[in-house]
Image: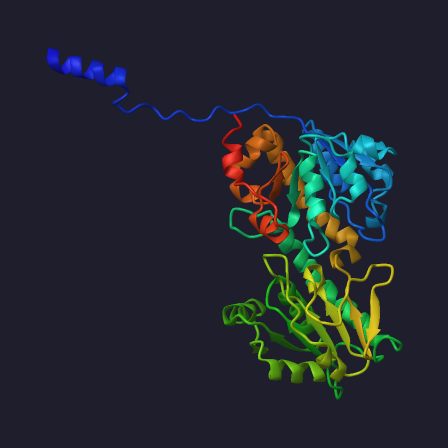
Length: 406
C-alpha cells in the first residue's frame, strides 16, 4: 500500500495522471470603432452597413463613424444614420482612424495612404484589376485586409458571394429585358412569351448561384432557357433546384455556338475560385449572333467570358460590338444598391458583433476558422497563397502567424 501511495504521489508530481481539461479563458467583450468612407459613386453605390445595423452595433457599445453622404446612392440619408447613433464626419481621415474600415470597392492608393499600422480593412477584391504594387502598398502599411469574396461560413460556403450572386442573377435578367426591349440597343422585343408569339431565347453560361437565379427569373418571365456548363453534377443540381426540366448541355463548342447564334439574350455566369475566368467565346462567334441581341457578361469581374467584353460602368453600362449589345459592369449588384446593401449588412453586422464578443479580430480569427479564410493580409504579411503565386509575392500560413498571438 505504501508503495502504491508512493507511485501515485510520483505520478501526480510528474503529470502522469489525467487532469481536468483547461478551457481557454474567456476574454472580455471588446468595443470596436467602425469607419465607413464614402465610395466613388461612378464605381460603387452600395454601403456596407444600413442604419438598422448601425443602431444594433451602437446599442452593443460599438462606435460607427460614417462619412457624410456615404449612403445616399443606396437611398440612406445622413439623418437616418445620425438617428441610428452613428457619428457623421466630413473628414475622410477621421473615418480611417477607426479600428475597422468597411468599404465595398477595393481601397484606392489615396485611401491606402490613410491607413495606419494594425488597422483592419474590409472590401471586395479584384485580381484582374489589381497589381503587385497594390498588395505591396497594403503590406507595407502593416494592416489587416479582409476580402468579402473569400469569407466562408461553417458550411464552407461563401456567404457574401452567394448573397450577391442571388441578387446579380435576378438583376441580370431584368437588365437583359430592359435592353432587349430598347429599339436602339435591342430589338424592341419583350423577354417573355405571349400566346401565338415565340418567347425570347435566353442562353446562360454557368450553373452556379448566379445562373440559377437568372434561370429562375427568366423562366418566371416566360422566356425559353438553355444552360451550358462543363460540370454534369452542377447541371443536374440546377435542374433539381429549379424543379423543372430544361435544356442543359456541356460546353461543347459546336452546340454552344449554334445556341448563341439563335439567342436573343446571353448571360455569362462562369465563376472561378482563383479569380480568373478564361475567355471562352471568341469574337468570330459574336459576329454570327443576331443583331440587337444582348450579352450580359456577369463574369467580367474575373475577365469576362466573351473576347469582345471589356469593363463598363454604371454611368455608361453598355456598348455595341458587331451589332450585339454588351452589358459589362463589374459590380452589377450595385445597380440595386438598396437591396444589395441590406443583404451585405445582414452578414457584416453579425460578424462585427461576434468579433466584439470574442475580444477583437485576432481572437475571432482563432475561434472562427472559416471566416479567417477571408483574410489575405495580416499584420502586413500576405496570407493568401493564390495571390502570392499570381503576383510572385511571398505568403505565409495565417494559422502559424496567429499561433504567436496570445
